[in-house]
Image (tube, rainbow, N blue to C red; front, side, top):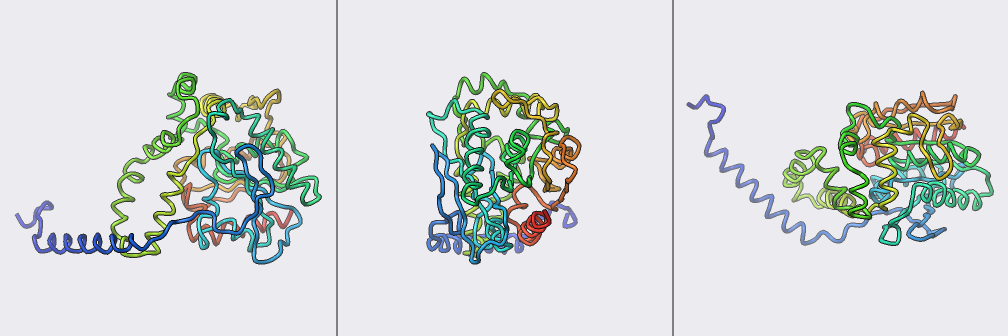
Length: 355
């Protein structure tokens, strides 16, 4: 019986239980001394506000060397602070160190007053006015635009509608083809009665959105990470990093109902971006009008935006200057992992500097 794979060594089990107990005891003591965790560590100044939106301008240690400012457009579904999570995991801080002059759109937290905001309001309204403000501050006609995830989709649409205002376009983990077989989020969205859903709930609650994302990988995102938490409970720095990530995940905005309806219906369900039939107000988005230089950065292990959803960008845009950069990581790791900090911001800066 001792050769059975189910045999339990009492002494080994006792030792493991003792180690687990000591970890928990140490963790309770560590938690007592961990202060409030903060997101967005890089010094910044609010240079424009409108409704819930804030446009931030970041301050680096040295004066920027880039001649064209860089505006980051993040997704609506989370706060944008994943790009400035902490001092040693900050894409913003590393872009500043490269010499870029960095701005960021913080969409804020929609409430009932924003229930009827549309994609036109976000793309042809808020985003357009932020671009104009950055351009005005620097005395330029066009800015460099960095769009991330859904913000990358917004940036693609904006670049097609206002090509004269975008000097260079960088997209990160940005879907273009929403109907690839490995797109789990798309399969979920395509089986929802979006009209009934939005008409019932109005603005989409952040907790509901987080639940949907977590159930895409339930064991990894709901169980394994908390089991792994035990291993770092006695390490104050690692525990603080864990709590900071948890704060970002669960401190999410609600989604303006009408914008959610349009995005889910036209992009996830109908895949209109690939067909050149997305309507933003009275204008049709034709990606062939994206003629600016484009750098498309995607993550090879991305479960939310798989590479197959992003790489078709080359075939549908009109630019003759297209570069793809594959990062060996996942949807979140591309912003915060040590490898990403060493590779991605320098690659973006080098690409922009050549143009």
